[in-house]
Image 1 (tube, rainbow, N blue to C red):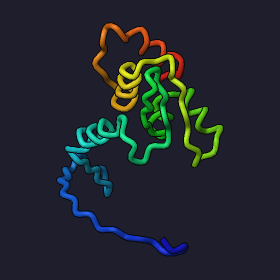
Image 2: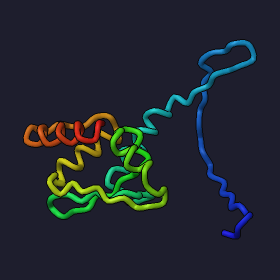
Image 3: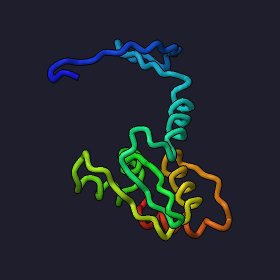
Length: 134
């Protein structure tokens, strides 16, 4: 990209908007598919390296890619950590005392607000959630 120049890309999108309410000259519209589509998009980012800027190191040695923006929105401690450092810095979160399975469930909860709780990792997940205030 040349400085001072913009690259434009046209993407075809099919959306259906429905009018929810009208007050005076202001109309409020919504996309009926927005929430499911957003949730599906967030779910697809779990463990996905696309645009990731965080590396989570687990007990098994497996590194899970994650996304600062999502982690910061959901966890106050991580938000503070990210705010106190350079924006373009790749972060490493040390979860080496956490199993890969528990870390993945933890991320699922952070990204989507829900997860399937396996009985053998419940304590581990609750400990992590309390630690980073999610």
